[in-house]
Amino acid sequence: MLTLIVISFLVSAISVLFFMRRARRHARRYGTDMPQRFHKGHVPRLGGAGIFLGTGAAWLVAGIGSDPFNVSWPLKASAFTLLCIAPAVLGGIIEDLTQRVSVRYRLGLTIGSALLLCWLLGLGVSRTGIGLVDGWLQAWPYAAILFAAFAIGGLPHAFNIIDGYNGLAGTVAVLVCLAVSHVALQVGDRQLAAMVICLVGATAGFLVWNYPRGKIFAGDGGAYVWGMVIAIAVVTLVQRHRVVSPWFPMLLLIYPVWETVFSIYRKLARGQSPGDADALHFHQLIFRRIVRVAFADDEARQLLARNNRTSPYLWIFAALTVVPAVLFWNNTPILMAFCALFIATYVAAYLMIVRFKVPRWLRP
Image (tube, rainbow, N blue to C red; front, top):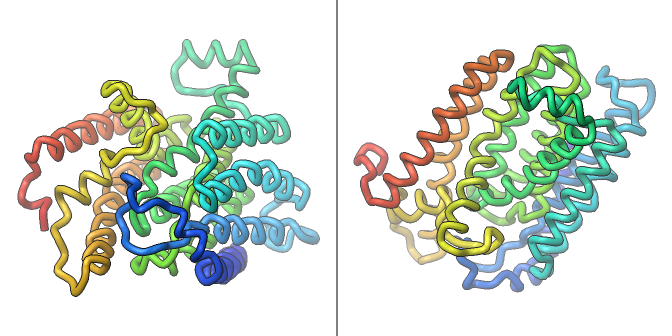
């Protein structure tokens, strides 16, 4: 699989470099008054296109010939998966270029791609670890398909929400993919391991240019690639291998999922539409109230320095869920307990930051 990582890395890194050099004029369309903007200058948002090309190239190579990488992934299957993902990713890339594709249309594209994937690949979520719900899902197969489509179509938007600072969402995606590949190899599923390992290589090719210099952003397109590929992988993993707890992906992805749920609640409580952008996400509060002001020659360098210092806080936060998920991937009660612990910790930390009660040891 090392060869697949190298292929995805090189294709992604070269593609991102090309977009970084050729797409600067499109970056001028991104408004300077956007609430989620924490950088100076006009930075292209086409890193997602490079990630998609790198991942897709490695997927297709994996299926060429008579299984040269021993991953049992036919070219037809990888090509179908790539084509199903394409509409959602292209919708995100068009938004990155034009800033004119509404949240409603992008959600429709991701859900549409998810339904197509569930139909062609036979995906469904029939296990939740909760007896009453599982009985209902097994009695109504179409409900299991809709559940899977909701998960696959919704996760891209969750990754889009946490994609706010250099290296943040990309590194979280790498951590999640490595965890999924580990469990997939534990149960002997080299195909799923190869699927996410290719995404790791492509994301690394993007991060070369994104962190710490911030020369290009992943944009909506990148978030949609991460969300859709990871969602397909974890749904398939739980469906194929009953030994894997359905709460393994829940704990693994609880950070972006809960950030999304909490953001929806927070906006509805304030009378806002959940689709409205704001600057009150957890990572934005850390940037504004925990990360100290960096002293630099100009405002742009100062903002870049603070931007780069924010991401490690969230990497550690995400790792605190990835580690127990990997350790207890087949133990549902423990995974459920860790999910509850994360939610309680998140809410307590959020309220602490909002109320300016952050301990000094958290402010370096």
